[in-house]
Length: 436
Image (cartoon, rainbow, N blue to C red; front, side):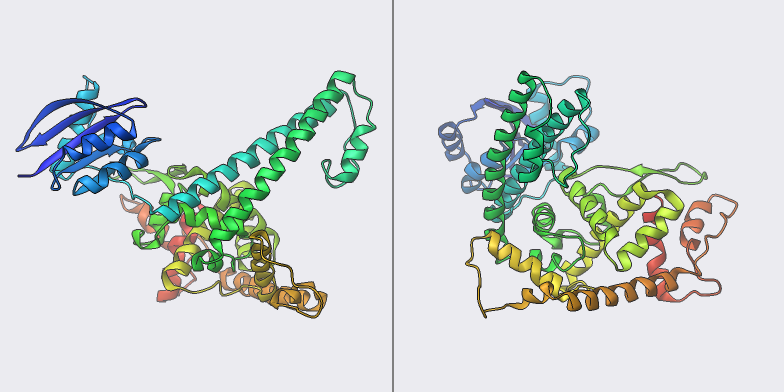
């Protein structure tokens, strides 16, 4: 007979409710320790199914209970709250709701990553925290200088050797000078932590074909590629590029009711915020390099401004990643010497020995100015081809009636008198991106 065990997890204990034959019964509490959970798991049956919510310690609970039961399911807490809103909310009610929803087939589950993906997610998250901490410290130093009317540093970087020499000569009070010295020491310590995290990420990425494939995209470096693959995990769980875009929270909100037109708002910002921030970071880098992505950025910027254009390029990058990972293809407009340079930088970050003397690898071509300019010219030709391709696109005015919004979306950016399948494939993506 089927049994579903719902556990409402807290920091120190979990409330247990068992669903069986359409009825639920309370089974008390279990402590959130490894010993207590292993003892609880031995009391369960191999045919039991355990349901828990996604919390900070849910993955550890899942790993401990999985060998003792048929399956451990992790539920999406936001969607469970939307489905099972109750006026009476207790730990028993929450645990019973989890078990009942799963038994009825209405429980919104989340994907459980494997050990390698989970490790990469932890490394990427820690790196992101270190980078944010370094940024805060740098802003505090700049704030001290601004408070005492110190002019802008004449050097490119305030925190390199020349910038620090200039900083020591500025007239600030002694307590502020001591604060700046503390901040500089903290920056050096965080720099060592960042270098170690980059080394760990690079070592894991050396054997990852998906990360190396994403490196072929203009504007995507190792940190961005590793962060995206840590968030994606397995591309097979996204049936379409729109699913991946929604997972990153780059899809616009839509409001529509009855026969009225649909209203598209700002992006939803649901899903993994860290991966979304990395996509936007890569979008700004891609907008500065020659190629079709820069042409797309310029076209959207002329209509909607540079901030919306950057988000539109980030959405385009998400779609591009889905197609590349699904079809096992590199970026078509990749610059070979730049890609080799990025891959060699990843190898050096992982601790591989340097190649000196006559042992020149493929990345050496990036040091030859003529080759770099030749590849840049090819990318500029691709950019001009894109501009020529979209030059004749004109938005159609909305039609009257309840289907105005859908018809308008399908008609935007249509070439006059052209209904070919390739333009029909491109139009919806371009239109939805532009609306962001």
